[in-house]
Length: 364
Image (tube, rainbow, N blue to C red; front, side, top):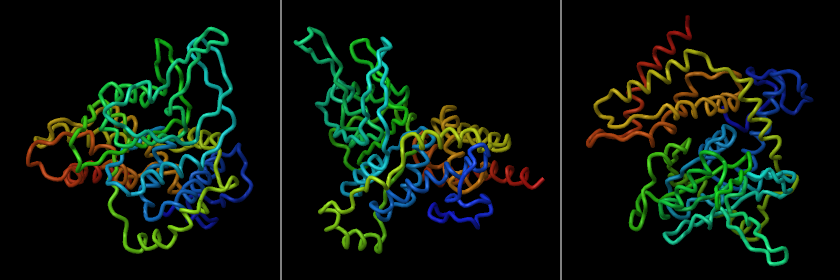
């Protein structure tokens, strides 16, 4: 079901999301959470043309507390996507607490872009202590990681030291500078990019960092009609008329609320969990797979499945959600033997027995 088609006729949600909502009713809470995500999707789609599937997956990752790795080519719209997503989220002042429990009321930026290069230092992304001669003390100047949405452009072009700093930020939502830990925002979301064809001067991402990305997406060229639409609106974009209006935004608080509501109100049956475990075990036993997916990948997939179900108007996870998300979650975590063929074809083949068993158990 399209994210744009949200009406009172939707059988899975018996109420219209535009109607007054009773926050005490789980069904109404779920409808309100879905309304927030649908609105965010619509805002991004107005600016980013021809990327509906990628936008939906990015929003699923955002609401399920994951991160996204995009394999793309220059000029594919990755910066526009990340910037539009970041600027569509507004918030009140967010208190940042340091390890000594001191709280400073500071705004977290909506969007920051980091261009990764071989000479980049960890302090360039995390921040650095600055000496203040007026009071003879140091204060911490935050780096670009302190934002709702961070675009890590060409992340595989930077040194392992910087990648380690990113690993801590993505895995633990914090940065460590001079033995002091600084927490990042609760809605911290990374969209990283790498060019799969340009390997000169790159540092391949280590397996632990790849495992931190919920999805690895490949952005193909947009279709003909979408490309024509981009050309017809390029003057408006240059003049800034497509900039997001203040009233056309969603709040950080509503997104965090949607995350909590979806986590508590969307159900994952034991049969779904059994299917995920069986698929993982079959992958690890297959002779064409040198390294299978981690247990962490299954754990990270659970909230993503719930978010996909909520966007589809359901309060339960179905087999369709697994078929939609599992290839995006597992593919970049597998290492295949030479000659094993396409990883997505392999995943579809290995998924089939478990999905058939899931279908039989559902019909009982």
